[in-house]
Length: 623
Image (tube, rainbow, N blue to C red; front, side, top):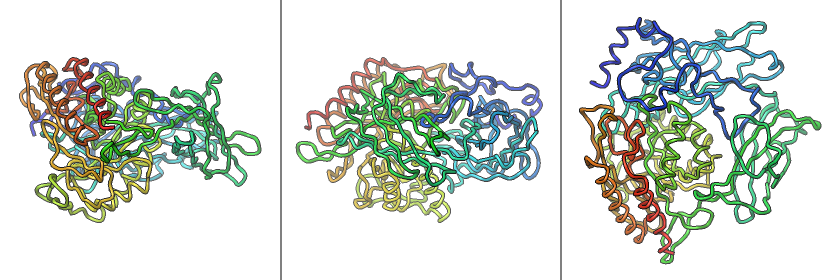
């Protein structure tokens, strides 16, 4: 437990934490963006880029809140915490270990603007790990379970009229590695490939005001053959006779303000009843690809008797994910009907200063820009879910995403067998009925939240047998919820011939290789690499680090990466359709990132880019 020596001391030195309003804590490395964070400057961007209302209709609640840690009715720690950073992080200003026996209690106040009179007031939490119970002005509002998705409450009935400020309290419990909740790589005892957990609020908290009749969501599905989009708009508070109107425009740039750009040409429009499928037909469609990530803006409104009740700015694209056969009949991944080799890193989304939460929006985008500069066309988001703006940047930059479901537990080899060299050679994790129900609840919420982002190409329900159970049922659930993407049932093991998935995903370290092949499915290398390079001054724990293999010089890393890319080219000739290199950045004591944990590039980008472009281009020889 060396990792938490300083953390344990924090419970003793409560006065030093409480004596100042806020400052980062701890002596570990931080990113360059950490210096930009302050209570007045903390994730102020509009958090929901795929559905924007006007700038005067929302209020950001990030900043300093009061908190206390309670155990067995006793307050063990209290003071100020910087929302939205988890309590374990440096940038929270607290940096303490949180246990399953603890309860984290947040308190803050907010003001309701007079111009919001007659509107509904919605309180949004983009993500809280894990169980959150909300009260407003002393009244219980609701409870939410799940650490990776947004939830909201209409708090209008709980507001006090004539009061200058309203109060909210959020009580949080987090079992972390209790085996019953999805938690990805978070563990109470970080070591190896398992990292510091995040408890409590870790994404933006905000207020929004809406008309009683308002848009709640939309879902767009492309038909590239006909140059059209099928759009389904969801709404609340509507009446018979209300009309949904949609216009589609050239170009989409998310600004955080739903003021339409009148210079954008209207390329399609439609209207109909709430709940009806609308068809947007585009005369000269521009397709989205990693090289040309074209987005269309949309304006969605609800009208009653000719009056606009609600309006949001949205966006979408025209693109389709499918399969295609190569010249000798092997299944390959297709984008817009054309074969594509997907090449990208395993991307874990951890930060030395914010843990689950990037220090700034710019920092979050930086990772994605670097991946594009390195020549990748995809990434595998590894057992974590990112803020909505992350997926918008992937849409905007042209990065396809394989989205993992965060695992409930690992335990393979002790609780269940991890089989990875053939079909039916692993065993299921003995998940309880409660754990299974929570898995499906959260996986469904994750998919519904993310499926409107066009970058999503592959859903990954399980990884390496970690808490893997009832795989055919999980595949069926995933495909029924979204039949427009590919399903990679079990990345790295516990394969089933009849699970109904699209992909066989082999993990092989360090060089890429395959234990077996099945051309009734798409064959991919879902993890390989792990070339380690510790960089002094940029290490989470200077006296303890590891990679699958380690070098002392960046040129050696580049040489190994290029050799592995050549091996991957040979595997492409044999039938492989994607490669996932481990990994984007170092993560805590892991040093096998292309960048250090604090985001310093270790390699010559030109060398990596050339290798990646060679790999991506190799697929054409099979057609």
